[in-house]
Image (cartoon, rainbow, N blue to C red; front, side, top):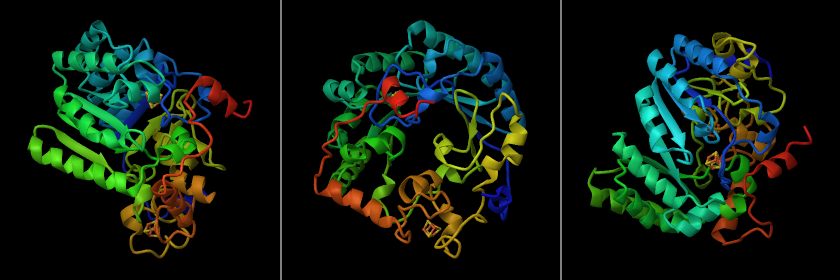
Length: 379
Ligand code: SF4
Ligand code: SF4
């Protein structure tokens, strides 16, 4: 891929969102985890100084939102320091957490550091399924954390990844969020990347399950009449049109991985033939504007048919490059979710299998270090 090919037609503004993946370490083992399956190859973490410099450089470039995620970001002892600096620089700060490791003392310290917003993830409303999906006993702990967040005056923002193993509990999940006083609940259907792709046959809901879940969500929206904002994020496999992935490659989001690699999205490192720079050796400005990796799929100049002549190309920018690579083995192809893609049959076959209730013979794979090392090619 020639970087200049991708840049053709692209007007490049600054990154608005900095996603700081401060660690891949996590006490949970979610079957849908979005961290790369070979994360164990990239465990070397940036120092506090490297992160502070990265925060400053991205803010100087124009980033206004800073999300701290992981892995479990609370496993970094310097999280409060990073949040305080981000706050001082004028970012709107957000922490995405499983809640494991959040004590009252750390809550108070994060509040004092100026943290604006915490998003707490749950796996399910029932102890059995929550604990099974994450291979930890964490439901009661998460509920306690929810109370701590409210005591600190943060809005209660919850996130639950939806899939075949929990989607029929959606009514109880929404009820639990309501009981915990959630102001926002994101019911985000699993996207099939990383560990979720490995487990796709187990996780993909049927079309009927999805319709029921959307109807239940609508019913709660009416019942709650605006008391809680409910976001139901539909899975793209069940649509005929792809999403405008990351709102466009190198357009809004700048992801920095634990080892300092800068990516246009958290899974882009899987794409072959592209090199992505590292904040240890390059400043954020030149990474964003000049690097090969960030320019490769900006705009529409890189497209081939059917996208190149499609009237929708500015709307969805051809969908997701990682999905194109994973399902069509070509990162410059149309996202196979699109009905016009020559590889759309792969997506249709996966949905048909889910609709037929087929479950793979292979057991679920839980995210874990040993499993990741086994997928790291000995590297
Ligand atoms: S999805 Fe689960 S295992 Fe992966 S980082 Fe988040 S909490 Fe940890
Ligand atoms: S052909 Fe390409 S641009 Fe057109 S709708 Fe499909 S993915 Fe989008």
